[in-house]
Image (cartoon, rainbow, N blue to C red; front, side, top):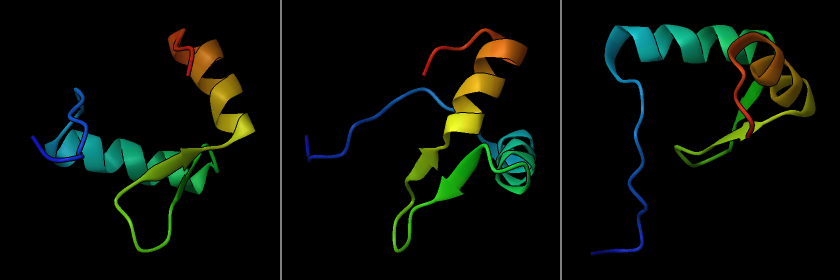
Length: 55
């Protein structure tokens, strides 16, 4: 396999909507020239508090 790491993800309209909301709330930021996103410190706190996700 190539260097790309495959992970589970939410695709389609639901995934796109969640991404849009999380970017607007500054929980996530898009990395320039990449498909990668960066989780902000606010995002880490909110994902833990709201969804019990540790990232």
